[in-house]
Length: 259
Image 1: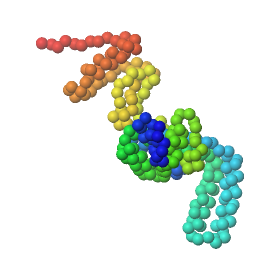
Image 2: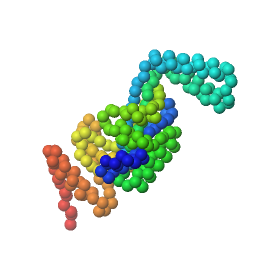
Image 3: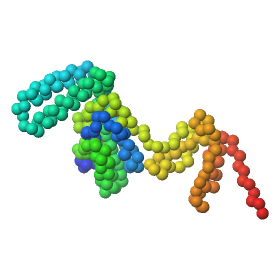
């Protein structure tokens, strides 16, 4: 393991670099992670949610609204400060209304993306590509320089959100907006008791099909299309072999050609 470079860490000749999503729309109309999940790029994505106490949030918002309201009435600031204060004032009032009227909850949301590659040049290309995708969707990103090791650990499936990167990634979001962070959006076919049939040409995800699952499929019929020599017969024989290995009764019939 090499952790001497602040822009990446190197583990077994593989480079890992992290991206922190630092800002996004609270009420997002589309799925936030849709573009990068379907991008077919080597990466790990970590999403953390921290539910907040609504009573404490309303109390803090009310205090903030009162203070900012006084500043706006005094009007003794320059124009830029007035615009920023007016924006935060309206934003705080909106959040308080959603909590009190529409029974929304407030969460702290953290999203990390860890990209890995075997070549530094390709790594930089992938980082720029992901940053472009996220920014085109209205999100602001920041690279986790000098915090690559902490973000790398945070992307492990161990529910550990490192304190060193939390302060940069924290963003409040309402319940209606948090739905847009649903990550399992890849269009693939995956049956738990199915057999491997190939890969999805759109996102390279694995396809597992259990044709004998009567709860999901009406019958086990299937059709194989392809050009001459593309492997239709080989694929059919492979399916038969795999179903035999799963102890499914298989009958092979090949009609004779008429002379």
